[in-house]
Image (cartoon, rainbow, N blue to C red; front, top):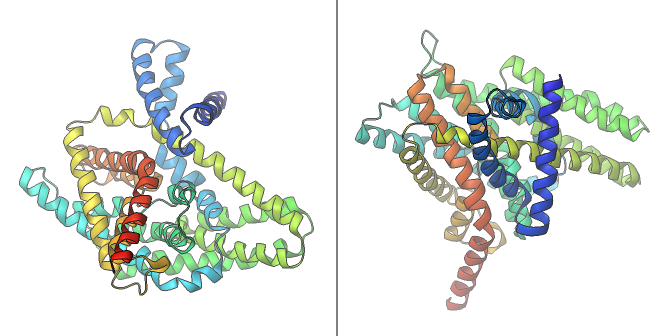
Length: 426
């Protein structure tokens, strides 16, 4: 318990100190700053650890490096992060762009995973890395889902058009479950002495089972949320709903990510009903709680991701693996979004296919879910393959979050200028 409190205090020191430094000096997006500066601290901490193993400082640094990100994220805070990101979504907005969001979250994720798997398999054969096709497809399913936390916390701060912003947010919130379903399907092909599962059965179980659980439990909590007059009890009810939903889905092997989003969207409609009844003060308390909790969990996650960067430096062939993973991700994301532009109907906010593809390709940030899935392959593949998957995933997460995140505003402005020039010439 004391060790856990020590780690929490260190996290809070980093979050407050790095956040203040960024606010006063660097002034970049807070989440990117936390990851970037934590990476630097992690490298320095590794050097300290190597010289102070037997000291309290060395033990503390070692405990920070030893945090199990998969357990912390997948079996800890993920449901609350997804809920907080979706509890302000408007169902009316989703209805208006249901086709586009569905195509991007399902088709783009599936195509991205397949494109990545096939491309990486070709490279594996050329370089004699030793990846099988199912392993490459599983790798693709890890890389394909975009990160809802990064999308809502970073991309929306750049003044994106309302409908495009909603598409990016909606895609990243819904494609987690698709990515998990693909991961289950492709990883099942690698399991020894395990019956292969049909893709559509797995997909149906992951998605439709999650939706059923999410809707059912949320409806059970609805009377408490709407009838109580205690604002704190409303918050507790929302926390109970999403946590129990995620727990049940984990037990039944449904997508807890999808169920958490469903729960968040339904509670968003309940919140709107409170507003129409004139209970604006309670709604403000509810919004403030989830906003602060979201910021805290995001900050802790990005600090952990930054500190975990040191593990990449210890992997073999890290530079080669990182470059291959980053290039494959960029090409396959562009290809999958490009195909979807022909299926999603009219592109909103006056974007053409090229501009829309460029924006969503560069805005397709990756985050904690990809790392958690990569870490879970330790029991599925041998150590050498596991290190390649983990190293490649870490490279994509860090590159998309830091490099693409820092340059997203400039890329967006360049796309806008290009579209204006094309309209003038037309």
